[in-house]
Image (cartoon, rainbow, N blue to C red; front, side):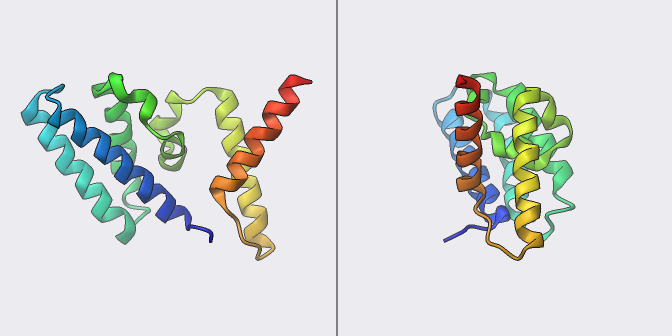
Length: 137
C-alpha cells in the first residue's frame, strides 16, 4: 500500500514531535521555551493537513529551529522533512543529498504524468542503492 506524500511527512513530523517531547521529559532543555516550541510544533501538525501550502513557512521555521535549538538531536531530524519544507532547511543538506532528492522528485513527477503509483520510501531506497552501487565502481 502506498502512503500519500502528506501522510508520510505527517508521520515523520509526529515521530520528531515524540523525540522533542522526550527531550523535555528528560529535562535536557529549558522548560518554558521548550513548552512554547512544542505548542508551535503541535500547531503545524494540526494545520498541515488542512492547508499544506500555507503551512510550508511554519514548517521551514520549526525544522530549522529544531536543528539550531536542539543540536543534540539534529541527526534525528528526518532528511525527508528538510526536503519537504525546503527553503532554509536545504542549507542543512549537502549538495549530493539535494541531487538525490531532485532525482526522486523527477521520478515522482514522471509516475504522476503516466498515472502510475509512486511509493516515495521505496523509490528513495532504490535510488540510494543505485547511487551506492555506482560509487563503488
